[in-house]
Length: 290
Ligand code: GUN
Image 1 (cartoon, rainbow, N blue to C red):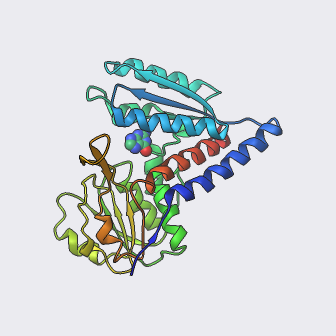
Image 2: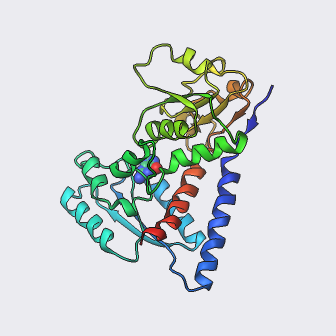
């Protein structure tokens, strides 16, 4: 059996097309259009690429874009001052502070300082708290987990009762993905570096979300036949045949896993484009909270 490929790029294109059309209609009707502020601190090359992609997409969809690039040695105080200004700026509906921040800055304090109503990343502790409460709705669902859920739904609209393994427990991906799987009535197991018998947990799982940041951690024979596999990993591994001397791989051994899974997302072209599409969807939604 060869798995169905979950084409995140194609799915993201159709979500972005809908957003673009909605914004065009709003413009024609003289209704407010959203503005997204991106804040990049320092020189992390991967973060620079991610933010550049977000800004490019914002412009392509007709969303107003405000870009802030701060020096590596920016102080906590000046970063929080900028966020406070953006919180008060009526032109800005969404604020995205790219993570990770340089080590001298407190990520936790920075996230707390963003208005939950402008937290289009969906990672403010207020929104994260609401996500974990049974009868509550966060103002925004986090982008990568939302993208993962849309990809799963594209091949299996009802996951009630299914067993899921989430490998990785980060605040941005692993933890909120487990919450969202549970909200959709699946039963997630959150796995991490101390988890015993990770391979066995994976083999029992109808849904496997790999977000450990470890190249090819998940081996082909760990996959339950027919399972839905979502690979969140973005890892650069040396490859002398490539122009840059490296290539991009996920957390899953794709070539082996594709032979056993029912559906699998590739890297690249899987979760990455979906994260940006969901950020755009959240930015559009942010107009409701103006
Ligand atoms: N760094 C890696 N992924 C993300 C994300 O989804 N949001 C932010 N703010 N930073 C990130």
